[in-house]
Length: 210
Image 1 (tube, rainbow, N blue to C red):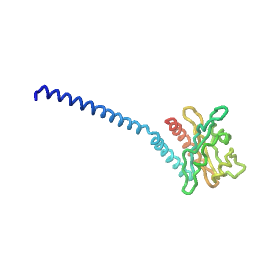
Image 2 (tube, rainbow, N blue to C red):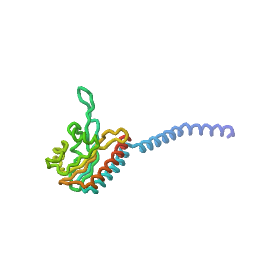
Image 3 (cartoon, helix red, strand yellow):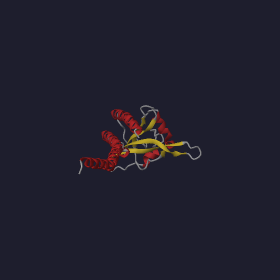
Image 4 (cartoon, rainbow, N blue to C red):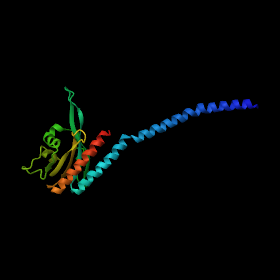
């Protein structure tokens, strides 16, 4: 076979191989890159990772304060009014830890209109701590929370609003509760305040990531 013919055949084969496998290789690389990008920004995975950090932190708070439950609520848009299309502001328990044998409240306090708890929300907006050593004591202000606490067996609680670090707006609440009357010491209240402020920064950043 002449050298020219061999070279021609070789050129044709190279062209065929390039035409057949070139696009396949490109598609393979594109698919692999896209998959890696999806894995990098997988919202479910990212939220689980963030949630684990939050749960570990509030479990530390629960243990330090010997509490029965620690929970975090987040304010969110719960829909719109029919005739005005105005947004309905609601809150839900998003993170919670409880002592073994203590019931969860996460499935109970879901999509609750904040209008039902206007007194306590106002306290939180103003940055005040709600401290209720004994829910059943009529001399202790409960800011409209008495019925809600009693419905889940809570006899004492302390809570503070979570404030967005950039807008200074209320984004939720962190709370500690007990199934028995309990008065936190000054040291415990100071500890709770520091932890609440720390969670404000973390939660506000966490929300903005989504």
